[in-house]
Amino acid sequence: MLLTPLQTLVMIFAVALGAMITRFTPFLLFPETREQPKTVVYLGRALPSAMMGLLVVYCLKSVSFTRAPHGLPELIAVLVTATLHKWRGNALLSICLGTVVYMFLVQKVF
Image (cartoon, rainbow, N blue to C red; front, side, top):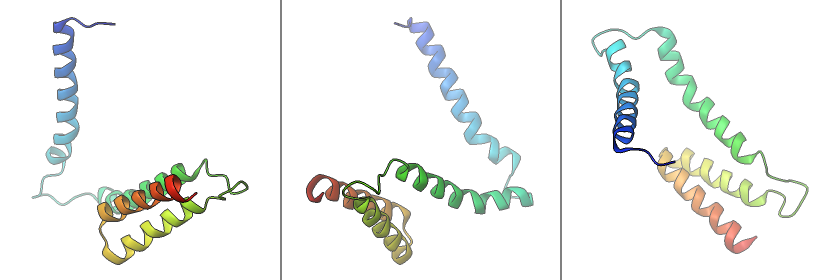
């Protein structure tokens, strides 16, 4: 399906408007000068851990522990990622190196 130039332009503006609304609304609702509601503070603390747990479960959902290599690459990569994050406290570093270790194990070792 080909879009006309006008349809493409309208779609780009709609996506840009949606992105701007989702980015700017929190700053309008909760400015720095006002105290944030306790629910928002709680969600800000709880949701990152919940999302990380959800991502780990999603990533490991199709791992077969009954067939070779019995989830060993995934287990090693998770341990490397958790250890790096505990040691350095840098999410980007631990995720990147954990991914590199996993890809190396899957492509070269197992």
